[in-house]
Length: 493
Ligand code: ADP
Ligand code: MG
Image 1 (cartoon, protein in one colour):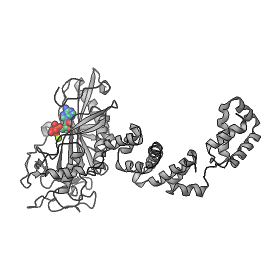
Image 2 (spheres, rainbow, N blue to C red; image 1 turned 135 degrees about the vertical axis):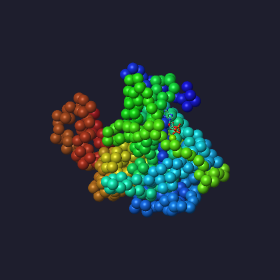
Image 3 (tube, rainbow, N blue to C red; image 1 turned 90 degrees about the vertical axis):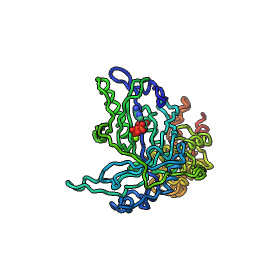
Image 4 (tube, protein in one colour; image 1 turned 45 degrees about the horizontal axis):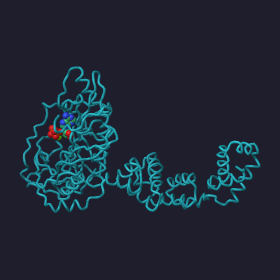
């Protein structure tokens, strides 16, 4: 076993092949766009979109004589991310030129960090397939420039180039090959995303390409050394990642079981076909001819700066989850859902403040998230504010409405965005606790249903029908406890 190979295969992670079991080995290289107003080495806007070539300075266009100037804020974001990944921050790092020629790379090289990255070894905890937490080790995080974009589909004969992204700061976060299934790879990617979002160092917006992964996959028979890996480039959703891994592992197993061998190569995932295919083999691999960028001095961080950044770190998802479990007695599942992103956590804590936290968690995770999901609306655009949801829970707690009516009120809150108190008054939904009205409803029912009276005296279970009918007679508004009590008295059971 190599030093990297610390995780033993577990039986449930083995993939059945024709001849024997196989184990999948996965390591991810994630590109995360740094949240910053300006690019890594120029003052041009790093905003997404915009008119083509509107966010391009002379530096980004690589005009002769232009020199890069490091953006201190991007460096601080990389430090913050490193600290959030419990990683080593390297006080001295260096920028190198990675040379390749492509129309969307005007410099003819990408400024990146090769042998001396700003962040070294760290770790991310995820739930493994057997439910136990496991550590995915981070090998490094380095800063680099994004390239521009070639647009091939605007003209049959020409290619257009948009340099808006050229020079935008990326963090490349490289994991060790510590994942053993597509599910673990997805859990790692999602956890990484929620850490970056909590830190505010990457917005994690997948549609805008703010986070993309190169997925390295190999297979082996359990206990054997790692097999040759293939790298699947630029996968931009967790669903595609899972499909790509499953397809690629199966392909490799089939090759190996029919006596072939795996060649190290770069592959592309085709989401329409659900398969990976060769992009370039090792023989075509680029020779990047890395060398230190002579235009940039080594990056030297003052230790007190690192400590200043550390002092401002927010509570991270794992810590939040633990706190939610202990402070609010939530299940691991609910705590995980609610701590996964800052917006959900803040919303929940606003609702739970001074109220029954478990009840608050139920309303947020089940009713609210369920409804928003169906509507396809983000929490940020929820028609029901945390204050309003809290007020609804108060109306149940103080007996103004019962649980059943609360669901109706909630549906109306989703439609109208109105406060629950307003809806209850407007629609006359106050719970009937007036025993006179309830007694009258019961008397009417008894008079109309002599057979049911006889039945319930024999079978106390039949009381359910009486409770239902009484509440119905009050328009659903009767307090169930009071109904039960009066029914028992009047029916003599
Ligand atoms: P390179 O420098 O060629 O990109 P690295 O050794 O840095 O190669 O590995 C790149 C990625 O591939 C890392 O995320 C690592 O975890 C992963 N990786 C390395 N070996 C394997 C393997 N045998 N199977 C799956 N993934 C691997
Ligand atoms: Mg690599």
